[in-house]
Amino acid sequence: MSRNLFFGNNKTINEFVYQTNISSATTTNFRLSLPSTNIKKRVYYGPNYNGFNFFIQPPYESVGPYFNQRILFTYSGDPGYVKTVRVKSDDLTKIIYINGDNQKIYGNLDLTPLKGLNQISFTNNPNLTGITHTLLNNVQSYNFESCNIIGTHDVRMLPNLSNFFMVHQNPNLTKILHTGSTGGWFQYYAYDCNLTGNHDISMLNGSSGVGMFFFIHNNVNLTGITHATTTQPFTYYYAYNCNLTGNHDLSMLSGLGGEFRINLNPNLKNVTHSLNLNEFSLYDVSYCDITNNFDVSMLKDLAGWFEASNNPNLTGITHTTASKPISNYNVYNCNLMGTHDISMLTGLGQPTLYYPNTQIRLDNNPNLKTIIFPTLTGGTFLVKEIPYGIYALEFSECSSMEYVNFWPLSGSVMQTSGINLYNNNITATNINHILVDLDTITTLNQPNWTGVTLNIGGNSYPDSSSGGYDGITALNNLTGSPKNWIIYL
Image (cartoon, rainbow, N blue to C red; front, side, top):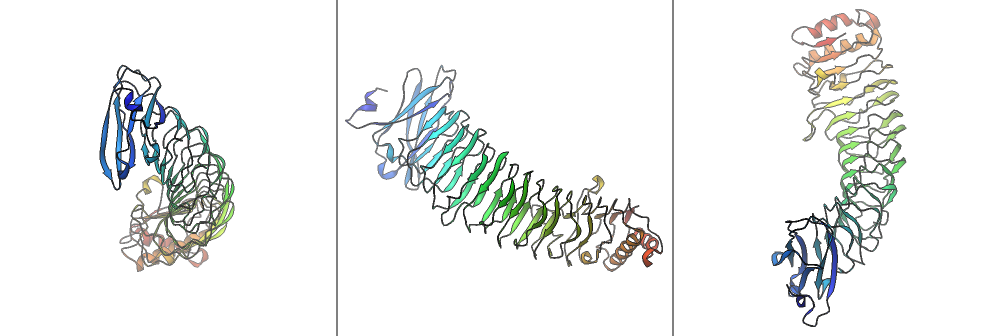
């Protein structure tokens, strides 16, 4: 192709330059998009050296009011050294979309000549280390996933950035600088990076704000996140496996719901919420350092899976009434004190689409004395892991345990399921009382309570008189036909 193709016809030629280390026999697939009304504007492509074959494919597809155009050329005799590609046009400002995914872009990418962009995508370019922008007022999709952006990434020249912002899987990205935006958000991805210190997105304070899909997990040096006030509903909020420290304030996000994962933050002491009416399908604050009582009474629609396990300084949880199905409720390996009241969670024991097993785990709480259950008229407690030591009602290794009243659960199905009260130092009086209760419950609710496995080992042995209860007769009734319980002493 002759040089006058680039510079002929007395046009002022603008140039967009990028570097690539694509190797021999690799065909590039670099895409540009222009409004159809400007499709006759000429965009030329060419290198700054000889030694390879290339061709241009004219506009090949229409997407709404836009036409896409590809840069296609194949290198020959090239071991993959860095080369410069120059894109020349008499009007680069008409380019509104650019896609350089998987093009082995090298070094810093200077996009300042492209002043009309509203969609930018350069995913999977592991040698792309930075991006330089000019002022762009209407970017609605921004994707630099799986590159190698280094240090601070400055997007303050992109006011009104909205909808899709994706810079995840950049392991050397330490900071992102935003400016104010009035646009709404559907996806904000900055996970699997090295964001350090506090991540401030309080300037993204449009009418909708950041919401829907918020993924910032796996940033082990991230100590905090500052949000703007928004009512936009969240489908996902993932900030797990970071280093969130102290109190994580989410009181400005009244639309939280869906899957909420903030687990694996070893210095996280508390999470502050505001009144929230959206349904949570997963709420996970496990493996943190939640301290003292944890108040989630403002979350009116807990459902699905609730996980607060492995918080050794957690002494209690305050809930409010929640009637949606809760398949799993896990607060094990903590320091729950005295009575743990979950009577307001009337959806316990109901499987959900993604969590078919149903379970309550409060094991390894050495100061837990008893549990107040909700009165259930349905639900099924069932897990398939009893041979491996996990029961549907798992309350073992609670050395201060006293009497546990199972009557509120009598309206649920426990058939072939299990209850674990192992190694709780329960007195003979309370063991007898529990066995008598379970015997009567099973009599009144056959077959729903037949074939249950019960482990009461590591406690006082039942007898026929302590506390005025005949534990031996109850034991024999439960293990005999037709109740057919399996009881470990």
